[in-house]
Amino acid sequence: METPTSNVAIGEYVVVKLPKANFYTKFILTTGILLLSALLTSLTITSSLSASSPKCSKTLSIGFPNIETASIKDNLFDPVLVDIAIFKKSMEFTGCPYTLENFPWKRTINAVKHGEIDGAFDVSLTTEREEFGRYSLPYREEKMGIVMRLADIPNFEVNSFSDIVSSRLTIGTNIGYWYGEQFDKAYNNNPAFRKRVLRTSLDMTMGAWLTKDRVDMFFIEQGAAKHIIAAYDYDDAIGLHPFVLNSAPLHIFLSKKTTTQGDIEVINTGLRKLFSSDLYKRLLAVFSKHRLTKADRELLNEILELN
Image (cartoon, rainbow, N blue to C red; front, side, top):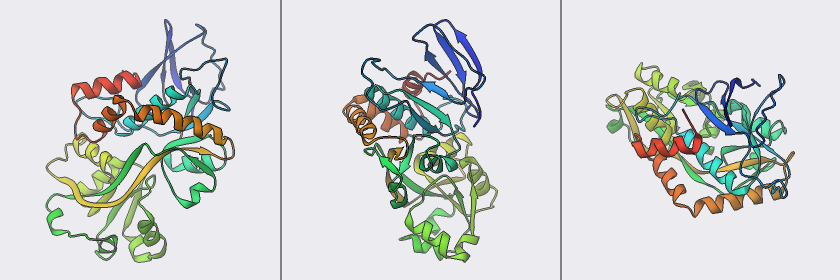
């Protein structure tokens, strides 16, 4: 685990640079005193909290993914910023303190399982995860899509995942995504299919693979696909195939080892309050867009306090 760097106190704020994430966020100092420790291993983000009546059993440590996009500019953004905004606003409604721990996504679920951190967000439900974690109410639907060269899309008819398995085409995938049970079954039990699958931890790598003809397609969350296509000027080269690989709700996810059922109930209360707000509808609308408007950028900058 890396420690935050470049901490600078400015008046009643402190600007903290997240490790590996190229954006900044401001945190209000409620006491006027900032205590820094050389052993600091996480960034504490305290939501609105009444000291006399804490609503969670503890300060929750939450796995936080790396951000590929430096900032919101030129109408481009990393879609995970919307999920962070949804998480942050829901936690403000709970009044629970939390920390964001900078974890590579591929390690996050395992860290929750073993109690290294208390939870994560952007987590889809699986039978295995239910054994060691607690799920919140779903807050967004994640749709996994296929990105191909524009010229190939009309010629590739897909009615089921078996059509992809039998196609013999090469596929780029991200090890941090869950593509559904059919993909897992084929990848684990079909050596010929597995041989055609390339894996990476970065979405942008898959985009480069496709444009350089290293793969015939790649699988990605549809919102992230829009970001990759726009951010790297691939509009005239690649696009989304209409077939949806998998659709699943996303949740906040807490470890059974380190949290209580009461903690997840408090989070659900915060989510219900968020769901009833106009802000929630605006955030979902931002996620579905190909490019951001000025109002979209201002909304995310206000919530996330980005520079």
